Image 1 (tube, helix red, strand yellow):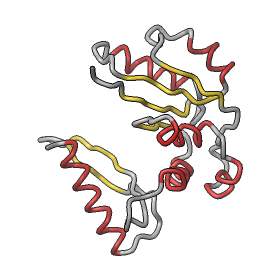
Image 2 (cartoon, rainbow, N blue to C red; image 1 turned 180 degrees about the vertical axis):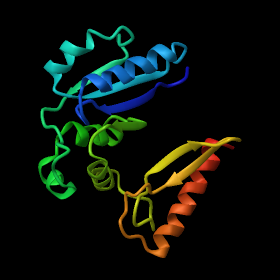
Image 3 (tube, rainbow, N blue to C red; image 1 turned 45 degrees about the vertical axis):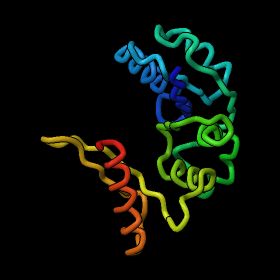
Length: 176
């Protein structure tokens, strides 16, 4: 039997949360009815989430809520959020990759904070100094992989080399 893909979601990240994040999960499940191998770890204020989840038709027994009362504000800098953000919905969703074996973490919250927290919690591969955000862009024939996306203000030549290796590895694993 195939094991479920475990997707951790910071439901409190970004504007109009958690509603827009729950709506996104519901749309995904509606459009991919044949996808039965996904299980969601939801991070946010439990009482608030329980009230809102009941509105969504496709969210049944395919999720578990983890109570996280601290929310990362978009107004704070990455450094101040790190100090205040431990045990936040964002922090706990990233940490779930270690504690719960989550395969993926999603957040619509502050991207800079997400990158810094992820580096602190998940670390980087040996000899890789900086992580890179990756974006997939469709082209006329297939897809492009674009790395960094403005996440790093200063990059050394070693960082750029690392990004090219990571980008090539990502591309070949997604499109063999």
